Amino acid sequence: MPPRRSTNRPADSYGLFTPPSISAAAHTAHIDGGARGNPGPSGYGVVIHDASGRKVAELSEYLGHHTNNYAEYQGLLGVLRYALANGVKALKVVSDSELMVRQMKGIYKVKHPELRKLYEEAQQLVRKLDHFEIRHALREHNRDADRLANEAMDRGKVQK
Image (tube, rainbow, N blue to C red):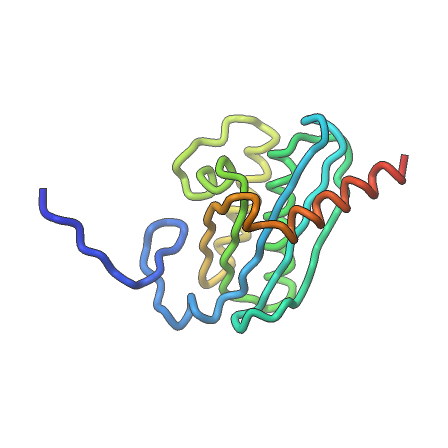
């Protein structure tokens, strides 16, 4: 087997190479979703930075009684909708949900019917962008999004 060649070019979620100019101009979104009790009161949080690193938006929503995986996908859908509504053409997403990241990359199949619908909607929205990448990060690298998701779940307690 020939040796693997390394490259400094970024790869998108499908393993295709993206011109560095597009990737460099991308907004970065840290997303998190959670459910207390799983299933239980759920919510998501998103922090979006522009290509220069300036925070441009925070999104947070209480979702009702759902699973953490449902909340993770809703966070992804939230940032994709934000990107398309605000003219963002290139997006890098960072999530602490290894399952969702692997499903979005096509490594894992999405078997649960409810999640399958969310996955398909996310894939449709991704196709409207010029560039999309998604990667997994440990929770400690996603603190602001985690805080916003917890604030959303707290708002659900107050609404009862």
